[in-house]
Image (cartoon, rainbow, N blue to C red; front, top):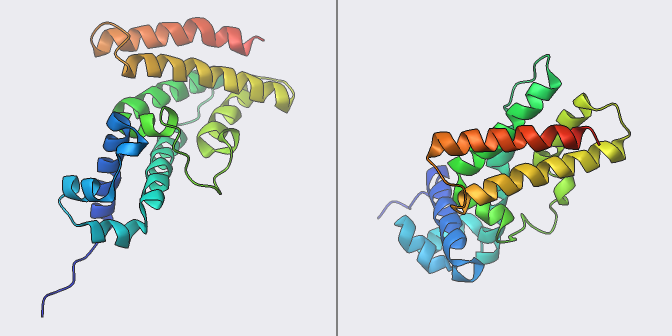
Length: 193
């Protein structure tokens, strides 16, 4: 009797990575269970065993992207300089996007939501980390802190999207310097609102 196939965490991760790349490059409509299984070197039944359906795979891709993103942002240490901490959070945002560009595109460019029970964007752990960091800098009502955090999010998201889209010239060092300069020029103005 043949041993049953084990569908482990490594296969699950591989399927999520393949699915994120497929969606990122071809859109949500390009994702099929069969194509993902083939690209990952497994069977369609393995995809169904791990995710249940194509729709659940889509939701899992987005949720995994947000999970990785949140882990990266939450790992930024807090020090005695709240403005410096906020700057490091912006760098971690960019680092996460560059490390997992397919997941980043799925999360933000393709509009694949984590699922019907997921919190709205300003309740996601990824945003709450930013909001809390902004609150450490500002002595302001919560609504103002949230508005500033949304502005900072828009700033770093826009810069990262331009970079991932190939619209910022230069090598990695030049793009890093450009990101830091732009964030340093605009970020303080948002904090001073």
